[in-house]
Image 1 (cartoon, chains in turn red, cyan):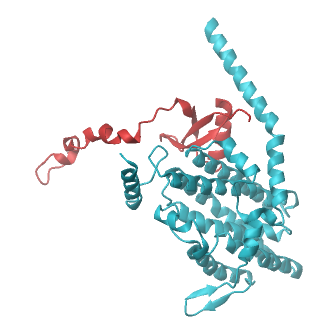
Image 2 (image 1 turned 180 degrees about the vertical axis):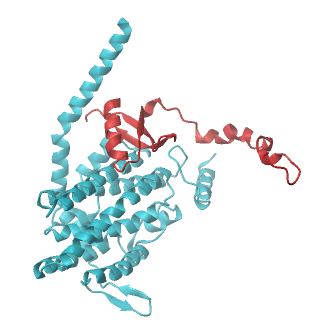
Image 3 (image 1 turned 135 degrees about the horizontal axis):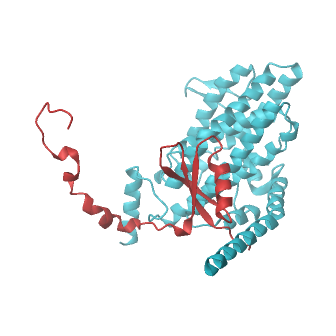
Length: 94
Length: 315
């Protein structure tokens, strides 16, 4: 079997002023080929003005099994949201 | 957590319409079913380029030619989205291609029929892509995240394929007698194979029940097939043409479409269709002929990496 080409994750900025967003992945031998392939695979209809690629092996992801303990601390902190605070009726610009 | 509990958590996520993502726990059969279905789908996109590629050089105008080229390029793209989705389940691209080339994995039987006339480019777009879209629209809501996202992307692009096909037939339908005849003959030939793209009837489909429970599929083969028939019967009127064997059924409130030859269908699936060998040979040849390019690109990338490393060492 021949050696498999590395896998890359592709991020596209769809319009100036917006974030780059993950759109999918592809195989390429190096960064330049990854950008060129991403152009052909993910922007055939002007979906992007900028492309980021990163080799998938460099991404560290949180473990779904840890999700509860990872995100639980934010659950009981309603005071981080503006609606937690009671203000008089009719008050403006706040 | 023991396996019973894991399965319970998994099913409750499905029931609550929470998508399953690659690193989430999933039953082995769910993973296997998805790999089979997504890879079959990816292979269909790739092999589906072949009958159309045959007509690029003979497209009747530049307008038709650029459209056909763009459509075929989309299909390559769709194959790539789907291969990527399958790879998130832990199978490699190499393995996926290997299974296609050895015949272990299947692709849609429809691509084992030849495209004999220019009108077939119309019928393929209108009927074959039309049938595929019915299925794909449903799959946008499939329970596996990466598959669902790939389908959303594909559906957005597929609509032009469908419309350009109908436009080809519409143009022929307003042409000479010979052109009208060519269009009708093509529709007749593709109609029933297109209906069989939805897969065997529900009472003979081994995968349907589990796939519905896991929301990989949300509608059955027969439901989708009937919807497609009812839609196509209305559309064909704009061509002043007919679909073979169609009768209104007052009692069901749907169109009957006659008998489908499932023995023939299974023969084609097993490799005895008119073009099975030709299609697989073409795929294998393309893969083998491209091997030196892939090898050279890998060698170049490694060399560049080494020289970068050496530069930073000496600096």
